Image 1: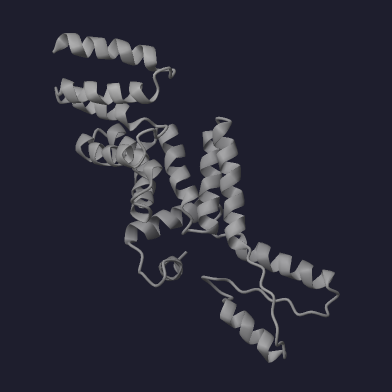
Image 2 (image 1 turned 180 degrees about the horizontal axis):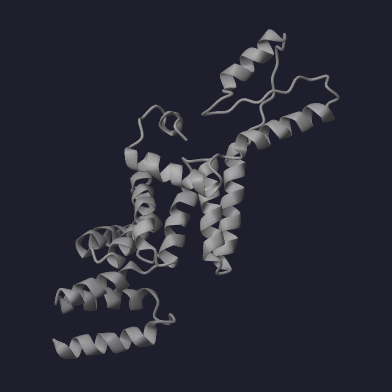
Length: 248
């Protein structure tokens, strides 16, 4: 765990990580036992492959961001007289698998398991975007906005033009009663994808009602109805619109 800053710097292409990111990733690793299982699993797979090949073909392990590095593996093969190599990438697929399992758990309403699996996916590939934004969403679903905030902030930092990331960060600030920040990212989400399934217009309307700006709130609710005239919330939205209009 003491080597986390060096590891993250390699993951980030040489850019030193912030203390907050180091602390976040240490927490992710602590959640899965203090270390990533990737290296041990990859070495076991290499040994199984070498055995299946009858020990005739040398099989070595090279990691992208930590020991043993790919350059070390190539040096070992070169010293053994190898002139042609075949590379089998492992880590990205490993992270994707954990993330896919997390999505399934989330869809089944198993928020605790989903959080655990998304954290494992991030530990396997800290640069992966999907488990990052999914973890932020899972923590919001668990009503843990304070824990969700750094993940949703990082998701927008990594992909500032992603509608989902902006919507979740806006919702996150909304749940923390930080309405000015919430408005900024909810507006960005609406600009990027007006039909975004979180319906940022609903949160914007709430913010504008709190500020006494009924006209702006009406505009947001009308926008939702224009996009989803027969949606599950359409009747209640029309009722709210009637109330807002009558109060003007």
